[in-house]
Every structure is written in C-alpha cells, then in structure tokens.
Length: 141
Image (cartoon, rainbow, N blue to C red; front, side, top):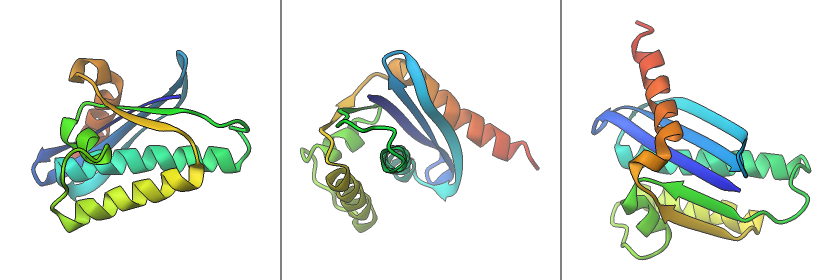
C-alpha cells in the first residue's frame, strides 16, 4: 500500500491543512483533504501521517486488511521523513509527541512500514488536496 501524505500552511504558522492519498497499485482506496486551523507546516505534515494511519487502523479493525500490509509512506517533507526514520533529532516537545503517537499506532498495526522522501512533483495529488481544503475554508467567508 502506497500512502502519499502532505501538509501545508499559508503562513508559518498559518491556516493549515492535510492531504492523504492511499493507493493499492493504481487503485485509490482513500483520499482526504482536511482543514486544521492555525498550525505550522511541520504540524500539518505530521497530522497528515496520523490521519492516514487512523484510516488504515480503522480499515484493519473492520477486517478489510486480513493479511499484513506493507505501508509505504511517500512524503515531500525531507525533515519529517528523516525524523520518522530516526536520522534527525527532534527538539520540539510537540513534534516528539507526534512521533510517539505515530510509533504507537505503527506498533499496534504490526505492519512493516517505510518512510520515503519524494519530490513535490510526485506528491501532486496529496498537495492538491491540501490546497483544496485551504481554498474551501478560506473562500467560505
């Protein structure tokens, strides 16, 4: 299962949103763009990973994934990928809390996981979902 996630904010911090696309081969299993409120880019990126994992956990609980799945996360945030892979130190307590939540969910799922940095151009659909969620919220006034 390939999982593309993105988070962004207009301003840093500023209005923020997440984008998630889950694929099995070329089939889209799930996609979502969610407005978060005011947050930083990094918080939005971590929220996107958590939202993807929440969906996977729910689907597993419903019996939709009876066999172990390999979760291949693809993100265009090198910082988040390196932090989740344990290669970059995490100094901010709130980011450390996100990493712990993500690790806890991954442990409970028991699925093999990879986090890979990709160019922004390869994350276009998740990025578009972020921008749609932001545009929808900001144009609702």
